[in-house]
Length: 149
Image 1: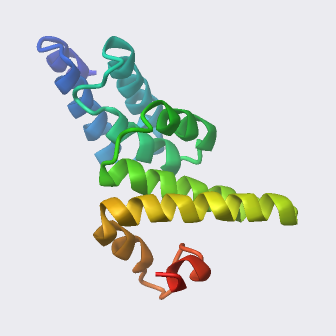
Image 2: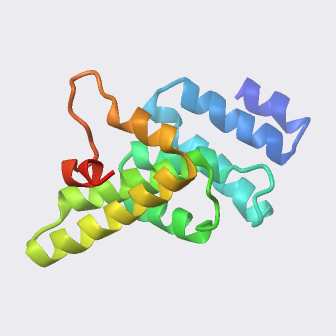
């Protein structure tokens, strides 16, 4: 509450984003709602999102499994080719692929995942390498997609 009061004195999109980042850094689920609300307020006040609140909100939504909200945000800012937004797009498509039921849905979700991978790879191949590197040696990226590089 004290932090909110202090930041309210310097109310701006930047301070709102900083506040949300602080709540996220605290890494406690009890602050998830406050961080999300703060970032969504930034987007409502500035639909063009000059301060890039979307780049903080998208990973937050994904980390809490809010795939529909993340998909809507990614669609709204589909022209954003930043590494964070493209990584979120790839991670979202991989999550959808993992949840696919039936052969047809699996094929469609795999095509979306491959497209998201290609888009990320074209803009920032290093981000693909970071996503593929895991401590356990298992990559979240489908092997067929990686082998086609």
